[in-house]
Length: 343
Ligand SMILES: NC(=O)c1ccc[n+]([C@@H]2O[C@H](COP(=O)([O-])OP(=O)(O)OC[C@H]3O[C@@H](n4cnc5c(N)ncnc54)[C@H](O)[C@@H]3O)[C@@H](O)[C@H]2O)c1
Image (cartoon, rainbow, N blue to C red; front, side, top):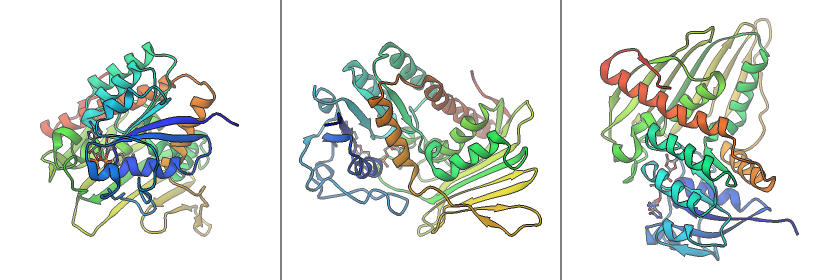
């Protein structure tokens, strides 16, 4: 029989439920424990919703696993190989620290931490516990349409990339965590981080940013528009993120990437389409690998553990640097200035 990675999952909100769905489809994984401080989420009498159709559909009802009201107790379970941390962002650091102290592999939801300082501390801890595999759940890095875009940029498939524009907009998610800017960091950190991270992942960190934004229901910046400034020969890059859309708007994400010889246009909307426009040809719909980024991200985490691979510090450091970029964006909004990104 092949070895199964024994998972303990902490936090049964929209992301914890999404991760549970994925684990249930994998053969080389067994979820042996779950934790949530809300009893009804733990026993399945209440359930969080996902924001994308097909996400967080299953639940905990019928799961015959150990259940804990405090994630710290779950971490003490010696049978667990890997801890999946899906609690609010302000708690990421303390749970990663505790899990590494017990020698567990760690998958931690995005953003890596609430602050750049905490993210850097996570990297130090991960370096000290080199037998543990630590991964930041930056799901967009694994989303088929975004993998396609990264390859197109790297390989100059349509010539040099001239401009990139990303958009991510939704109605306010609601709930205690998202209503408290101190916990979630507003849409600026919580939502817009996906696009900032993807830009950092594809092109490296910008040298500076110019952002404008306004506050919303979290009490923090909930709508942001950013220009990413690179001192090298990079494309023009901009991004807009918001969860201040009116109720009923739902969730949408899109990108437009303009190259010397082609334009790529992606829209999640209802049917998820990626189109290629080339002068003189009919628009082409690109066939994408089926599935959401969450699934490929979690498969990667499990594969890395089973292969005995060490933490990919390049990727982890990039996830940390993304938070430094977001913090520069915050400063830029507050001061209405072009802000350099910290090293
Ligand atoms: N990758 C993505 O696309 C994506 C999407 C949504 C959220 N997220 C991230 O996932 C994290 C969680 O978001 P969510 O929407 O699921 O939030 P949520 O508030 O719905 O869920 C978090 C859960 O953690 C539980 N919890 C809090 N403290 C606990 C403790 N000490 N022990 C056990 N359980 C505890 C809460 O009761 C809650 O049920 C956030 O960091 C968020 O940014 C990522």
